[in-house]
Amino acid sequence: MQDMPGTHYDNDHSFIEALPFDYKNRAYLIIRSDSLEQMLINFNSEDSPVFDDLHKDTRDVNLIKRTISACLVAKISSFEPTLFINEQQYKFLMSTLLYHLQFLLALNNKQYPTLSSLYPFLKIKHEHTYQWILKIKAIFEKKEVHFD
Image 1: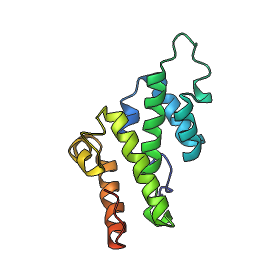
Image 2: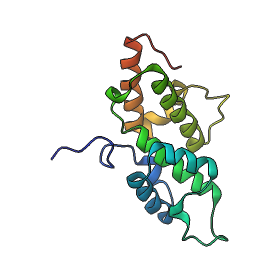
Image 3: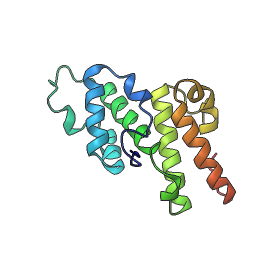
Image 4: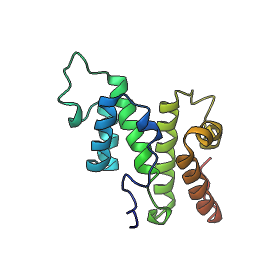
């Protein structure tokens, strides 16, 4: 059986697997139900309906944001490069990925300003995302479109 692109079978779960159990389960719900746009909205609002059952006193906003960021990385790293129609969409996805990787890895964006500066961290523990970035960058660099 061939896995469908964008499903939970062909993306990077390494950031999700690092989450506490309650948040990890919610992350899988988010991946299956939310669009990329909805995830970005939820990240900016620091909430999502999947966290509604958590008692307000036990909610950890940082964990909620980490959960949504992990889902964004998983969602983006599942996209097929042929889905990109133009340079703007490519650059938007790459800048979104860069921001959320910096957030998840707790790296200063001034010290690690590019995706390539994150390679040493990604290559070891987040191989799928690392390979996905290399693949998509190579495709767009052939078209003379560069991200970083």
